[in-house]
Each structure stands twice: as C-alpha cells, then as structure tokens.
Image (cartoon, rainbow, N blue to C red; front, top):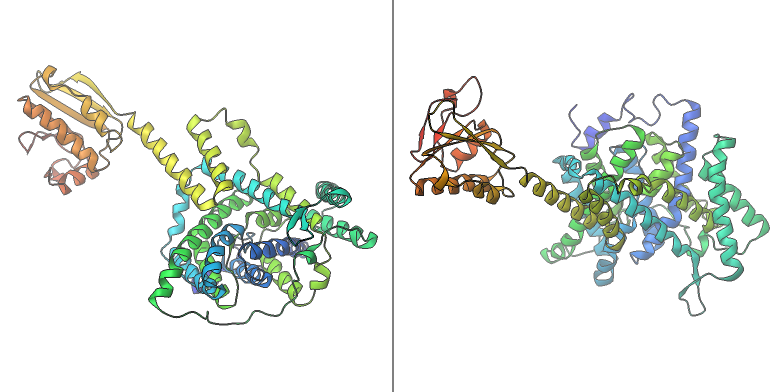
Length: 538
C-alpha cells in the first residue's frame, strides 16, 4: 500500500478495518475502555504540560494548549493508533533559550517552522530511516527515558520555601506524600486482579484523590503548580518581523526541535508498535506531527511530540485505537474550560504514583541481564545511549548510539577481509587469491597489505566471488595493489566482479566492461589490470 504523503491522503486512510476510524468496529465495552484510557491520560497530562511550560519559561496554558492540539491532530492522523503526543521536556529544554533571548512570539514562529520541516520529512518519507536505529540503541533509549521520567517526578517533592525558592519536603508532609505514592502504585497493581471495568491508573487516581479531599490531607495538589483555568485557544499569526533576520534566528531552533521531536516520536512509535503488534506508519507520523505543530504555533501552543510515558499509560490501560487519543485531547480541553477547579484538587502524589508505575513498565529490565550475554560493543551502546539520554537529550543520545554502532559494524566488517591463495586450474603457473569479505574504506588498508608481489608468480588473479567492492576506497585499494604488481613486472587480473562493482569501476574510469560478455552468470569476466583489457570469461 502506498503511504500517504498529504493530509488529504491521511483522511482517506481513516477508514474501517485499518484502525484509523476511531468508531468503526468498536463494541460498547471497548469504546468504554478507550474513553476511560483517554481520561486517565488526560489527568496525567495536566501536571506534565504545566511543568514543561515552566521549563520553557512560558505560561501554563501555552503547554496545555499544545498538549490538546498536538494530541488531537496526531490522534486523528498519526501513524500509530494508541500513541499520545503533547508538550514534552525534551523540546522544552531547547525552547527556554529562545524564549529568554527573543520572547514567546518567536517561539510560536519557531514551532510553525518546526512543523513545516516535520511535514516535509513526512512528504519525502524520511521516517523510514528510523529502521537504521539498532536494537541496543532502542534499549538504551527506553532505559534512559525511564530514568528521565523518574527524575522529573522528583520535582513534585519540592514545595515553595519562605523566600519563594523550591525546597524539598520534610516532616509529616513528606511521609504522607510518600505513603500516597505507594498507595497509588499498590492500587494500580491490585485493581486488575479485582476488576477491569475501570483502568487501574484511573481507579487509583480517583480513590487517592477522594481520600485526600475527604480527610483534607495537607499534601500538594495540581492547583499548587498553577491554575489551569482558561478559554479556547485563538488563532493568531506570530508577531515577528517577516525578515531574513527572523529566519536566521528561528531556523536553527526549528531544525533542532524538529529533529528531536521526530526521533522521540518515531522511537515511541516503534515501542508502541512492539507492544500492540503494529507496523509501519513512520512517515505518516512525521507528517502528522508536522501538521500538528504548524496548527499549534498559530494557536498559541509551545509545540510537542510523542510522549512515551503517556503512551505507555494509554496502552497499558487498554487504549488501542484512535479513540483513546482523541478522548484524551477532548478531556484535557474540557478540564481547561469547565473543570479546572476539580482537577486542581487532585493530589500530585497520585499522579507521581502513576508515573512511577510507568517508569517500572518502561525500563527494559531484561537489558540488565543480557548485558553480560551480548557482545561488549552492544552492551557499551546500551549504557552509552542511556547515559547520554539522561545527561543531554534523546536526539543526541540516538545519534551517538547510531554512530557508535555503525563504527563497530565497520570495524567488524573490516576485520573479515581475507585473501586465500590457491593454484589456478585454468592458467598454468598462475596464483589465485580468493577474496572474502567486503572491500571498503575500513578494510582497504588491510587488503593492500595482504599481497606480496615479490614472492608471487608472474600472473596473479583476484577472485571476488565472495567479496564486493563497496566504495571508492575499495577502488583505490585495487589500484594500489595493481601498481605494486606492475612495479614488480607482473600481471594482475580481476575475476567474478558483480554488476554493481563493474559499475563502480566503470564510473571511476578504471574499467570498461561489456556486460553482455557474461550473460548467464551475471558476473564480470576477467579484467587484466596491467594491460587494461578484457580476458576470457570465468
């Protein structure tokens, strides 16, 4: 099936049978689960969106509007039903410098440009490159993100001090908060053993909130962070000069935000796909994220991307279709418009307990066991990506992990190059070297060092039946070997080159080959490097 590349194509994809139409084929029971999962996610989104807005140094409603708009659009058109998107900390830490230096209007313009870049990535189907991320990098990603989510929850154990600064809780408030967190986690664990009528996280939040409100327990609640009361987001063009200077300011930020957003979204897409048995949709997710951020920038939101924590809450609460994501976005808007007073009374301890359970479920615990079983290079990548995710950000961690994995692969591939000598059965007195392993930049030097013309006979044949020339470094290596034999007054022939190797040599001007000379075996005929002519076919 051709992947959609425009918003109109996405709309065509939302049809019965493919998980796109949120209402098609849903039973009343499944619809109830989807809606309740969305409600659970919406409750968990509120403190997260407010906290990330504070990180970016923008008003709380800017984060909440982003969570609503990005969440709704990606739920409708994204590449993976069940995923949740919204304002995230990975983006917020990049935005704070832009807001501090240029103001919030430049942030809105940057979010629009970020969305355009992501939409282009979807149109040109760049999402497919996420398959280049190795599994050890994925393990490091989920482990690092679990640690980041855990560390973010520790901020909820701080309260305003006498001079307005945040200080750690102490005394009865701390112990009471910890007890409520543990109680929430216990309820999430035990509720499914009693009933599955209500998602366990939602039941836990409800029970703990009732206890806190009824007994008037002195613990922090959502309202202590900020008021979430507000109206509908309104359309407005960012108030920035439309000049090249503005573009020079916002483009670097937009590019970084687009990259971070896409990497986090696509890795979350893969993770959710693994849990739900779904595949594909990477480029569609890129475009959906782009459209969502373009709209968000024009409606006063801080932009966003996929949220692994909330996506895990949704999936583990039973959310499998687009209805859960749509419900989460709509509930969030209803909280802002009509239910802020109620939502602000929810104790933060209940939401922290939910996120701690997400951390436990997200962390790849089996990766600790397999560290001693997998190759040391893979273990290094897992630990490295985890550490960089915690210390820097997800985008840098993934790039570092992919680069290290690629270098390890190149090193291992380079070590496989061999030249096994045997006597020729067709040319008397000739020596044949059977080349094994890829010939590329990593193995080129070793390849050249394998040959010693001074001890070889007058005719030497290099048989590439079990090898391939990959790049220009490989061509240069062959040329260097040929020059060594030519300097010794000896002949060198190449045999069994594949068509693509022929093409490389021909493009480099080193080999002129008529492929019709060898139509049956689809391999090259002998090439006499010294004389620059074709030999007999083999």
